[in-house]
Amino acid sequence: MTSATHGARSAPIGAVERDTGLSKDTLRVWERRYGFPRPERDPLGERRYSVEDIAKLRVIKRLIDQGHRPGKIIELPAAELQQLAQQRRAVRKGARVNGEPALSEQRADLHELLALVKTHQIEAVRNRFGQLVMQLGLGRFVTSVVAPLNDLVGDAWMRGGFEVFEEHLYTEAVQVALRNAIHTMPQVQRRPQVLLTTFPQESHGIGILMAEAMLSLEGCRCVSLGTRTPIPDIARAAGAHKSDVVALSFSSRLGPNPVLDGLAELCAKLPAATEIWAGGACQVLHQRPPSQVRTFKSLDTIAPAVAQWRVAHAVT
Image (tube, rainbow, N blue to C red):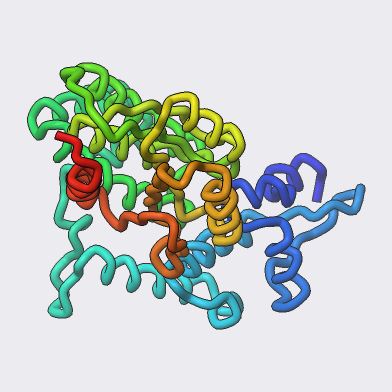
């Protein structure tokens, strides 16, 4: 294998960590314990992972996030893993036992948007997003378009049907649509004052922007720090802005330990009166929710949470 071919068909461990959400330590442990993945070594002795192994690791990570144990699935062939993932998606999206298609398969409009992204027609995607915001309103656009479309993009990425740059194009188009919609809303703001961000390991910003949209619709005062904010800086920013709530988003690519350890650290640094609200696709939030953190399984639960907070704090 030539060096050029080797580079095109394999990736170093750092790139695999970023691509799959599996830590370097996890990859090394699995290699020793299960014999998978099976990296080659480059001339310097560094691990290089094949595109086939990376694709399988993506599926395994998604299945682990859905509750599977690695020891039970890691030795399965890639085809069986894909079938298992498809079954899980059908259950999650509400497919019926009589064979009716799942929700995402019934939404032809979403698949049309996905096809526009896949064929790199980004201006058409942005225009369509703008039309949908006008037609549906911001809230319905977030819950009935962006949320299920995120699932479709995630599933396509997991199957290797989406390039990294295509996912980035999609993300940017969604973010532009949401920011434009948020900035054109009437500025009638009241408490809670909400600081929004993600932990340093979390680069995905769509979730926190979706939450900002839903909070803004409830008239909350929102300050966003974007993504990848160090935990001490989150605490300092919350103090500087007198935040009532720190809202965090976690994608499925983030492992449980960084989430739970980071939340515990942040709780210790924030005043007791400052609440932490956390949501996203990271399953540990819902399987082992920290006692000091309010977790959200869906965006629809944000409005009731805001109303409850205002009642508790006598905010009218």
